[in-house]
Amino acid sequence: MSVLVYADNSEGKFKKSALEVVSYGKALANQLNTDLTVITINATEPEQLQKYGANKILFVKDDSFIFNAKIYAGIITEAAFTSNTNIIIIDSSTNGKYLAPLLAAKFNAGYVSNVVSAPSNLTPFTVKRKTFSNKAFSNTVITADSKVIGLAKNAFEVKEDPTTAEVEEFSPVLLSTSVKSESIEKASGKIAIADADIVVSGGRGLKGPENFKMIEELADVLGAATACSKPVSDMGWRPHGEHVGQTGKPVAANLYIAIAISGAIQHLAGVNASKTKVVINTDPEAPFFKAADYGIVGDAFEVVPQLIEKLKAFKVENA
Amino acid sequence: MKILVCISHVPDTTSKINFTSDSTEFDTNGVQFVINPYDEFALTRAIWFQEKQGATVTVVNVGDASTEPTLRKALAIGADEAIRIDAKPTDGFYVAQQIAEVYRNGEYDLILTGKESIDYNGGMVPGLLASFLDIDYINACIGLEIEGNAVSASREIDGGTEKLSATLPIVIAGQKGLVEEKDLKIPNMRGIMMARKKPLNVVPAIECITTTQITNFEKNAEKSACKMVDADNLDELINLLHNEAKVI
Ligand SMILES: Cc1cc2nc3c(=O)[nH]c(=O)nc-3n(C[C@H](O)[C@H](O)[C@H](O)COP(=O)(O)OP(=O)(O)OC[C@H]3O[C@@H](n4cnc5c(N)ncnc54)[C@H](O)[C@@H]3O)c2cc1C
Ligand SMILES: Nc1ncnc2c1ncn2[C@@H]1O[C@H](COP(=O)(O)O)[C@@H](O)[C@H]1O
Image (cartoon, rainbow over all chains, first blue to last red; front, side):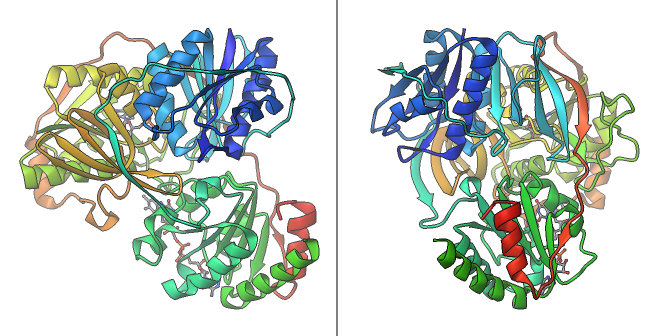
């Protein structure tokens, strides 16, 4: 019984979350004393995954493919059958979350999403996951024989473990579905919140859409994605896609900078999975300070422009 | 068009999350329950189809009697009837099998759900449901139009949106964008009065399997105190982020 990982890619390249799931799969394969098989679809260099411990790499190559959940789930299912696996690991990207339950249904598998660490126990098979919108964790036993694990973003360290893998082209049967992609619109040149290591976020305290220029500038200097609190997107100051929090996008970045955001419980629930949080707020009593690692009591209109200049200088020095 | 909307009954977003003393169960003491926020978007969209296109809307929940006020609220918002499957929603696998049975008995054309419940955050019921019923599925839906049998939908992708076409029957898991925040329906007095007379049918659960079991909950570790940096000393902040947190 090997472990199977689905390694997603973006325009052919593996993202960090793909390397995280492969590293997780390897750790689990070691724990179970078995091999790691990875399936990937239209990655330009599938053999790169050898570096992270894949023993076998199945790759599907067909340039006509656009992501389709049913078809991709069919491919991964077939790969699981041919590699005789009963554990599948998948990431928590929008596509990963779309695919995972479809895989679980095929195998009558127990699916656990938002998993944050390797199993604490193999019999019974127990994993720890985030629950209650990041307000707590639960230890969950997968009682079914087959298992699908959705790994939370930024929860498991990427680890190199070079091996020599068999790299094999895989030609699966494609399922039919009425769901067809008509068009894709990507915000060009911008870093997606889901992919970002650093997220700079602005709140209602910024008083108007024009003042988000400095948020964008700060994000530029840091190579960060921009985000906002819910009222900011509700008022139309920023696009909906930037709203983060319990009912918006989840943020699990290395660094989250909250500017003029009070730190309401719903906002915190969506961002507190981030490793380091910095808060800039005029009000020393703002609840966000209780959830932050570093805080500055100050006026964003003074602090942010200075911070941009200082970071530019820092970057020059450290280049 | 017959629409089935899946309603999860969850703690209000402001709730403090506590567990029973042995940490095996969520402590519902003093907790207000509401319609799962994502399901509210789905329900409001369903009511739009009812008002504009003559659809009928059934809401369904898997839960014990304590979820009935939540179903009544959905009726007050405008659903035509409610079904409560009388069982503890043990895990997503179990819930999806129960709802699949309701679908099979009801000749529905469309199932609308939220993309995730904000309590257990499984994100699995809609996908499992579609698979069990062998019908199509669109997740993270932020726009939905239906004409006859033809579905046009948009879904959120990482860093953008994708427009999709499909045909009924289908499971659609939605979020904000399905309708706008300001268009969410709030029950009015008339709706509340009418809801009392609408059918809320309680049906027994079918025998089915579960695949997971929660052993215990843990609260988040206490955070160490926030380090305050003077607004005039931003070099110190950069230093801390670089050398201590190692994030820049
Ligand atoms: C069901 C439900 C779901 C929700 N989901 C979410 C969610 O997912 N995400 C979310 O963000 N919210 C959510 N909310 C809303 C949430 O409760 C808060 O209302 C919201 O987060 C507040 O946004 P804010 O911090 O930007 O604004 P405010 O609370 O108005 O805070 C503004 C802050 O800016 C500070 N400030 C003012 N001027 C300056 C200045 N010049 N410099 C620096 N600081 C300044 C103020 O001191 C204040 O702390 C939800 C609410 C409900 C009811
Ligand atoms: N007990 C339940 N009864 C009815 N619908 C549910 C239930 N649990 C989850 N759902 C639906 O499935 C969606 C996803 O839930 P989950 O898979 O639990 O994250 C929710 O937004 C609801 O629409």
